Length: 539
Image (cartoon, rainbow, N blue to C red; front, side, top):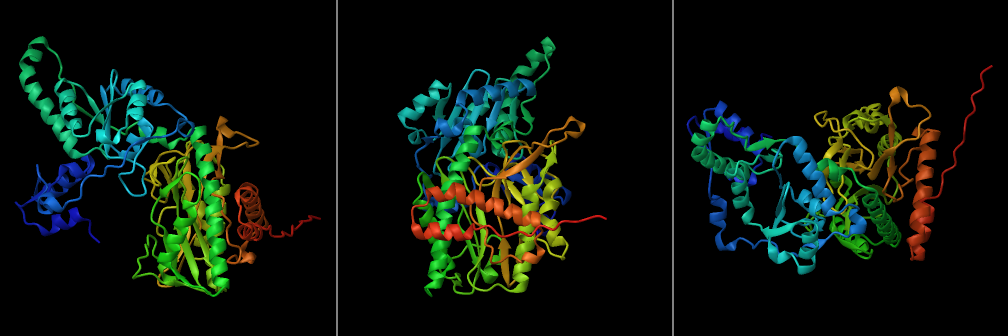
């Protein structure tokens, strides 16, 4: 399927032009559009008014008005003032005068605030600007209560109207300031406004500066913002919050899987849509739960093979007494964010389903057990998750791991684990990343096993080349179904890993479970499997 820009380039006639709303395209996107269109003799014009907005008219919904809330200091682990100090140090190093913060999760992280403007993501529409002597949060001021405004002011942050951001950027640019923007994330409209203001000011000042021999400063400095990496490396308070969220999540999901097995045993069926609702209801019972971190993916049979499937009342298949169900879900808690997938058979799995499931599990274990030197990027580790599938000619068409925010977006960078080697960001201690290999039989079934993990330093016997080595430890504490395992494919070390994981699940989650039926289900689900060790004797 062609990308829209490629389709336009191939179907428009030479001399025609494409209208673009520069406020909804990043600087990098706009540049790629312009370069591609130019090769085909097609122009590009940034429109001052979006025709879609005009057509929408009075029927367009109002902007969201959910209030901003302060992210608790106990879970944030770092003050707003400290984060601003770090940004100012980065500005000095970059030789820039102002940092423009536009991604919503970066704004939320920098100012230790959370919002409710987007479903599943606790963020609010806003911008931030950091200079050496000022820091401003641009947001609908009606969302900011007096206590939050006072708290931000104590940290050196002024709250200003969302709409005033563009005019302030123009003022900075006209004053000769160099603005640091992330071209992948800042809108083309903001950059254009800054460049136009600077050009107008420079036209007036140029004769004076020429007379003095003063060189004109660069208005826009493109570069990766310092915030994504700082946000991606969680501090100890954030990691503690993430663990707490996952233990609450462990109770919710143990309750759900216990409920499903009980329903199946009683001969009661439910469809995929209902399954998603029940998953949400179990999470809602947990302290600090605010919303799902994404819409639950509950795929029975062939729907499980649709990687980003979302059930509707019309499309939902029935989950009955012989179903293979893939359930990918997550929650937003005040202390952290969760994302987990389990694949569960309610009846008797086929031999191929067990083989595929076991190879996915072996890949999951291999990645979870990996040790690797510092400066290792995620793409180097991707093969651990795929190797057991590859041995049998199987694979999956998605990445293996993505970053996850701390009580923020369920998908974040800058790191990942994927066969795409373009992301060179090294994994570092404190980073949270998912481990989610899978297998999808088109028209048949889907399998995925997903845990969130934290990168930490490994205590290795040696440190070759004076390098520190790293490893993972799990945040997710939810049983992995043993019915689907082909034990003949499992080595003793893999069974030992599974047993150790289930011991940790039982020890950390069971004290929080109040329902006796759920506790009994959890006991069975985490029961260790016997391992026969083979001794090799060399004569």
